[in-house]
Image (cartoon, rainbow, N blue to C red; front, top):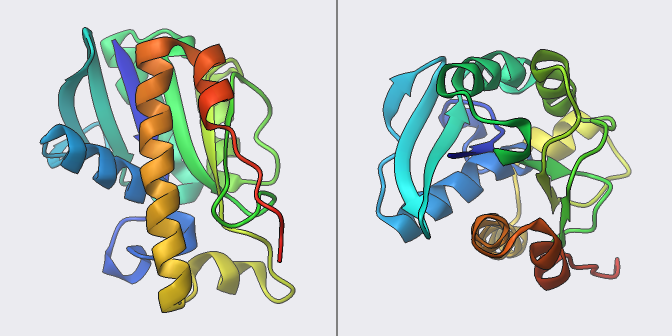
Length: 189
């Protein structure tokens, strides 16, 4: 069994922000796989599906970003999912807008949601997909939860599509091949 968890903040106020890229990717996966991610359980919204021959839980923690680890720990513990089968998807300001990066494991960096996940799971040994939302010269908070332009909205949707494919590839062809197929670098303008 696998968990694909997208990090974000619940509520309409945050729905189309850069900080909710994890939720956006889960929404893309749920549409592609024809599964509803609406069952409230373990402080999350959950949907069950299959990718290839694997049973997969799509998870959107509802604890707000900085407490995402609380919800994800509860789901992983209940279903006894091994760390290497927990795929976490989140926004990253250190990656150029439109790029994605898969990593097998690693620290949380400066991302508070990932700090919570690492702390509550008690490990860094799980794969993650980082979705590039680009940096900003102004306020970090305004950048990640502020309004997005129409042009950038399209790029973020395309990025979500790439990240959804990457998540499926991790399960279907393995993480090494998925990294080769999906890791992108996009030059900053």
